Image 1: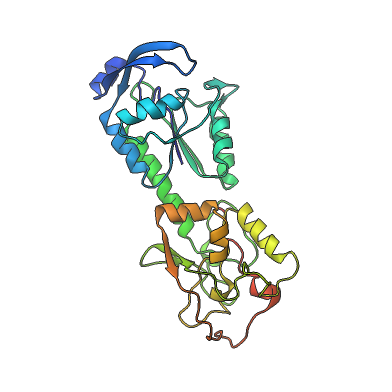
Image 2: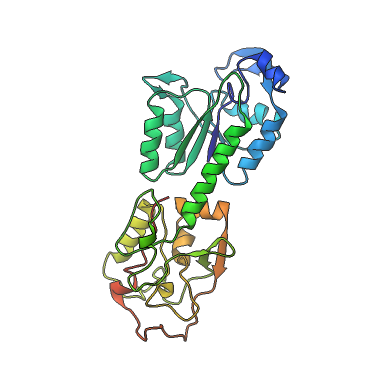
Length: 321
């Protein structure tokens, strides 16, 4: 997500500088967020709408401003933005005790989703709290904007680079020796399974992540416990995947159970039920490559059919992103 402030970001503080930088004045005559009637000039730049729509190709734009719904209905249309963009109820704004007050409301509203914040005012504690949020698997980027000049192209490029890094992290191989969680990508030594098989779900040519087009015949999400999982095993798999904002790899595509020509793919049963952070990032930035489950009459390459927990021991979610 990209959270957008208005005053100091889209509407600079200094009209003289704004005019020099190509901003255009727009007469506002209507209610303020407080309900009082106000009138005056709002300076908006014609390039800002184009830039923000560029971000919208890879992220959801949300208003995070004391303008509230007026940002969506009055500011947005003048920049060519949709009027139905989400508006975060920020409550109070401004810095108090080292914190930009509206960030608390923003974080509550978006949950664990990655977010970049374009604002002209941050407190001294906001940077460390954003870093802590990132370390807990909730990627957070604070982009300070000079309130005199407003939003500049460099700020947009910074967010685009951040979104690209998120996409690269989401495409990293997902090694699953023991359950692994955390905000960082696996190292090179972690990119293979126990038997040396590659556990990457990314297609290196199409730059998409493989997702089964339908559930495999023994999907752990089909009724009847077809994989004979021990009691509570499925619940634990789902809980860990959702906690880590990851996913589950289909057991029939794992190394050691791999059919000839079959490569690891995300379990369709899990993807149909849960929309984790990693799955959202992959879908929005790259999309999925849907592949059919292995043929029903094919046999595993090692000549054995895993049962019970051994069939899902490596089908844990990838690292949190």
